[in-house]
Length: 412
Image 1 (cartoon, helix red, strand yellow):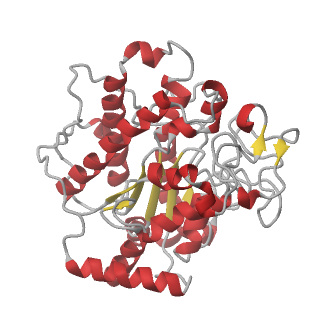
Image 2: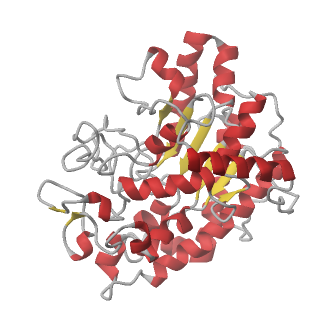
């Protein structure tokens, strides 16, 4: 069962791919998902044209500064993507997991939860901000009954836009499988509340999707002369990734999603795993950093064109690159002592391997921007979510999450 409105999805979306080769990497379970889409309208949507939206946004910013109270009634929240938003899918026999100490050292239970963090990561903090219960991992045995109505986290560490990303990790939940679980979720909710209410829950839900970084660091640049680097030049690879990401976003829409936060990649050249392997002067790796600087700007016009064709701001781009670079480039401004050494790890910059019981562990996680070789600390994630909530169009385009919550509360 696919719970969506009757909107015609015979969209014509230009894949932003000028090459004649358009390989199809993504496995879709149903024939109807193999539609060809071409965008004919290349206009960019003006940002916040309506003055009333600007006024609402200003009011919400002031209210947020005054009080941390939830901005609207709780709504379902669904999460898709990789380890940056994996809320604890530890029910798989895979090496891409964070279920042993000291992960979770600052979580209320002081025990590992499966999050790649010392405490909360992005989904948990967003749930706090929107006044919702934390989403449970979809494979959690506790996700049943009324808990299903809160939403679910389908994310899995190591995955990417492409199905061959993260092949070094066994038994991870790739995107096509995350979507299969989402369909299964909808069937389970329908059994509880009926089809009409289940469809309404999904249509009014908030969605977060985070993809792309692993397609570079755990695919194209994973090893010298990787399969993808021999198949594509970097410009071709950017276009290919964007074309495949488009299919994923359209599939989300087909499955009923109507408010989707789409994050860009972070500053990949500043990831401590990259510094440990490629940097000798404490500087971000220029070659890898350029990748993010080219790929991310392709994502914004894609989202704008897609929204224009749909006639609604379904997709909202979140500039995770700038959100992270703010505290990486000037950690002291945010109260951190460093952004060039992980709190937990080993080797140069504490950037080699995962965080384990044998790793170096900093005594105060609040003064470190980065938790391990790839992931921010909880405190750094809170700065990121702050920009999700009230950030300008430099960070959230065409609107931030506070504006979304205010607008949707008047129409629900």
